[in-house]
Length: 380
Image 1 (cartoon, rainbow, N blue to C red):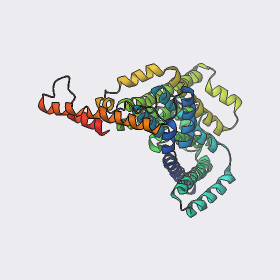
Image 2: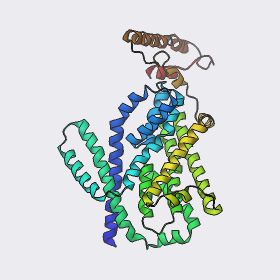
Image 3: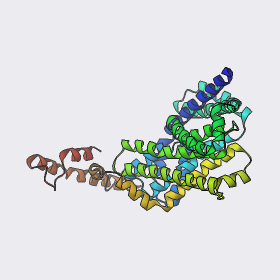
Image 4: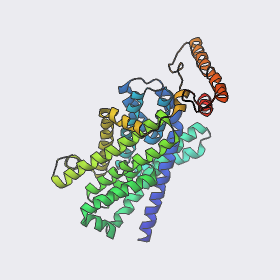
């Protein structure tokens, strides 16, 4: 048993380390390029496609959401397109889950060996970053396989027997486990992959595995809300919008599961059990369906959800004053671009007399904006 515990911990360590290396490398590789490409998107449908692509490339819905929110705040992206992008990021992140779901045991060993060798011989920082991402994938896949092989020996433990015997109470416990894992791993895809390894013990009902996935979705809401503390104004509204879609998706999927479990309604579990044999693919499909539902909620209920996000976000006067007015559009003509920059400078210079007036007059008057706000806006 001690040997199996050691294998499990080794696999878990490789899994978490690989997940972190992959996430940080992909964000560093993709954030600048994605930010540049997003500038040319002004179409809702294209925004959906870019959301799928950005999620698959970065494997970080939260990170891309923050980037998009800042671009929306600076009027680089229009709000409708930005919300389409963040609404469909989750579907893109399912790529990693499906990749791990396939049985490629021996291929993983070769992949890990080759990427490790190539990583060691790379001198270019850009190439080394790319190889670091591949090495992260290899570590994640290998760690996943070790966890899966060692975890089967834990099926007789009392905790798994308890979850099997008390299935209804086990749903609540599984939901809480999903929330905790989401906070610890800081990755929704990572939680889904661990849920697969937990389910491979064979003693946990599939309904409880589904609840782990839905629990991770619920925890993503507060986590995204915490991320929103780092931005303000419209950027924070977009982040809170994403947080709300996480929560609403989790609530809806849990309700569907309850109706299916206790009222024999034909829904997600029935369809997956009927048409998919592989357990790993079933769990991956649960995650993908949840992400698609989130995207549909984002598209169909955009206005009421964003209005709620606005009510939860305090008004930021500094952001309104610091937003550009003339250089929002992308102009190919260099001279025209310079003219727009001059207009923007003149708009800022016109604020200086008011800053001087604030010194001479009572800043408590309603028609004046305090100097600190004006200074921060001009600096931004």
